[in-house]
Image (cartoon, rainbow, N blue to C red; front, top):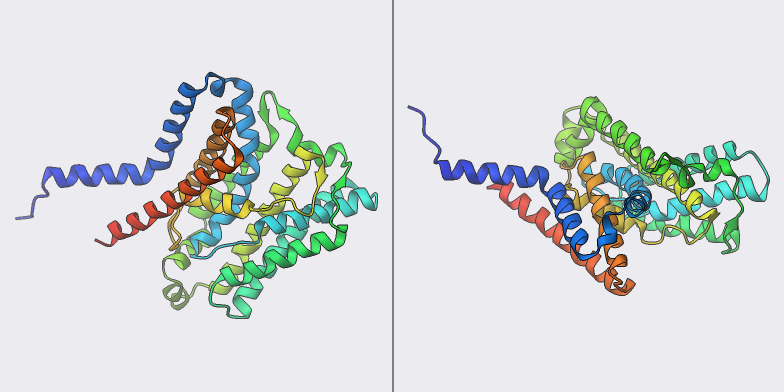
Length: 326
C-alpha cells in the first residue's frame, strides 16, 4: 500500500508553490493597493502611463541581465555599456551628421560588441567569475565614453532617434510596447529553444552541462552579447526621453536591473528565473519609486528603501534555496 500524505503537508506545499510562482505579482498588486490608498493620484491614467514609461529602460536592461543570472553569473557593465553605446550613436548622428538609421545600428552594434567582449574575457581568460570581468569593463566602457566626449553630453538628436523614447501609440508609450515585444521574444527563446534550455542547464550545474555536450563557452558568450545588446536598446529609449547622450548616463542602472531580476524570483545561484517575473520585478521598482515621489519622500530615503527591498529579495532567494534542498 502506498503512503498517504497528510493534508496539512499538501496544503503547506501548495501554499509554498503559489508563493514561489506568484509572489512577485502579489507583491506588485499589494504595493499598488497601498499606494492607491495613500495617494489618490497614483491610479490616474497619466501617472500609470508615466510608470510604464519610467519602467521601460530598467525592464530592457533587466531582461538582458536575466540571462547572466540564469547562468549563475552577473553583468556589472550594463550601465556603462548603455553610456558607451549612446555616445557612439551621438558621435555618428549629431557630431558627424550621418544618418540616424545608421546611428541606431551603431548604438545596438556597439552594445552587442561590448557584451561579446565581456563573454570573451570570461571564457577565454578563464576568469573565476564574471563579477571580475564585467567590473573591469564597467570602468573601461565608462572611461571610453568620457574620453570620446571630453566628459560633455551630446544634444540635438533627430526625431528618428527619439521616436522610441518619446512617442505613444494611443496612450501607451512606444517604449513599453517594445518591452512587451522583448518579453514575448525572451519567453519563447528561453522556454521553447534548445539554446534557452542550455542556459538554464548551465546555471543548474555548469560542469554537468559541459559533460553532457553543451557548448558552455559559446553559450556564455551569447548570454553576455545579448545582455550588452539589451543595454544599448535601453539606451535608445533613454535618448528619446532626454534628447541627449551623456557619458555619465546609466550610473547604477546595473543595480536596478539586478534588483528587478532577483525581486522577480530569479536566483543568484543560477538556473531559476522567468521573463515575466523579471518584468514584474522591474514594475515593482518603478511603482515603488513613483509612489515614493508622490508621497514626497526624499531621494536619499528612497535609496535606502530600495536597498532594503533588494536585501529582502536576496534573503527570500536564500530561504527558497534552503527550502528546496530539504
